[in-house]
Image (cartoon, rainbow, N blue to C red):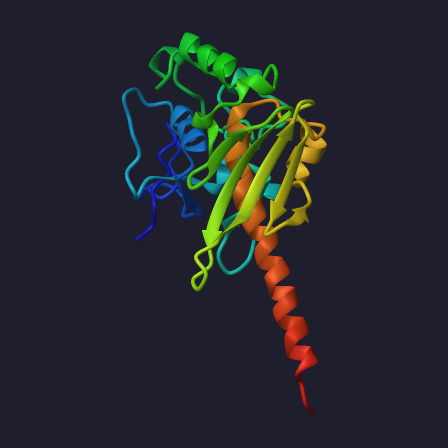
Length: 230
């Protein structure tokens, strides 16, 4: 079964259109809302089968192989307004004309309100409501920490598994089991290593997990080499 692209006027997946790779909607709430907004359909919500085709993403956000997949750690956020395309957008300008803004899922004023709410002015802008799923919020004197605990199966003692720390200058540091994790490329190059929007926080856990998986793979390989007997 070929998934149909739900973007207005796109024919990918239809009987009269081309067959191309498609990507299902993300689970992260803020990113999902932006995808819904881009679809440009009033009072519409995606189902588990809804998808957007590869035509609407830049090549740098796609992993090509036998099956095309998306590089989620690069924050593939879709453009909201094609007439005001930001430099950090991941979308090409659509090949087909779009409907008028009056039919969009969110009105212009609503999106403006979202941008104002999402913008970080100071450390006090960060609240518990901005916690990624599974994380806990902690406000300190000159920093804010979002952390995720794991409990030892034998002793029952908790350990900080993943953490996202934001200091008073809005600089971010990431860690996994106490080990420092480098910041993602999109954050270092596009945002000067400073947190400017609350919705950016939701992208860090996936990056931490990707780095942790790579780290664990290296440890496993080293252990195999250590105990290898020719």
